Image (cartoon, rainbow, N blue to C red; front, side, top):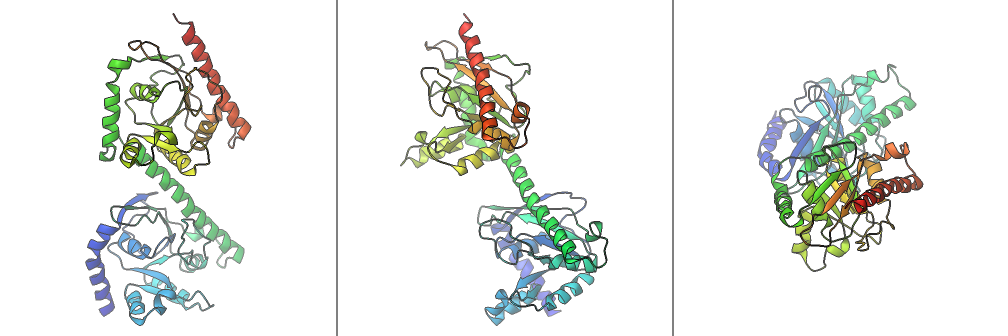
Length: 427
């Protein structure tokens, strides 16, 4: 009784700290099947990123006392900490020997209708990768018949941060193995199945995060970018752009979903012309490192807020590639100049296949555009839109090779060259 009162006293008093420091955004694979109001016994299996994971999962089920398997390390530091762990529902697990009393204690809790939390990785993952799972929870689920609830979280703890959590559907062992006494191979197979489930939930969560970030119609975090694109649209009084839609599909200035724009690059103002034409969408632009000046943090911050994605053109830049993939995966519009630099002579050679790689990784269509800048100030900037194609439509391979990606870019620039020829034939 005293332990029960202490547990709820600690939970109530720790709630303000949790609300300030661990703000949680929860996604559900099926909210009707599994949510934070779990009734009856269950085994909650989640990845392990930090010691704060215990607080996260404790408040994930606010009206239930949550029990958790904990390593011997948190008990042996001092007696007081060991007592606290016992009060908050800890089930001691000695990882350094074959002592299995924790299994009996866990089974007893489940038979009483409790929620048991298990970190199958058995230790904190410092690199963010999901380690190998220990299969003891599978044995518990098979013996007691309780469901396994897979949970994934990104471990994004901290002030002014938000932890993103995904709760999956309940997994019943008997749905996948009808044997009363499963073999070691069957248990290992079930364990790998749950691990793959948690990993796939992490990938799905990243997609949902990208969608929330890049597809929202209105958000205060995009205040500067929205003001910027509306301001750029007013430059039409000076540029007076005109769009020629030469493809079969119309209304391309109002694209839905992810889109990768590839265009020629002859002047510094080319990105402004694209932003003016697609002003209804937030257009992000892959920008060379030369535009971001060293020693000008305010300018660099402003460029980033306006939608510039910095990339180092002279070496591998995985951070820039990942950001571009997140933009496209979230349904954003990304502008890429495959030539890599300004070609003032109007040439279309020397292009690279990085844009095709981005389109292949995300499955978004590529839209070729030819920009014809006029020599006189008050002449119109003319843009010619080609036919958008996905990488799969052009090479019909799930995993295209380097040669396939080069062929895709050849197709894009063949369209741009044809658009250039038609533009030059106009009087």
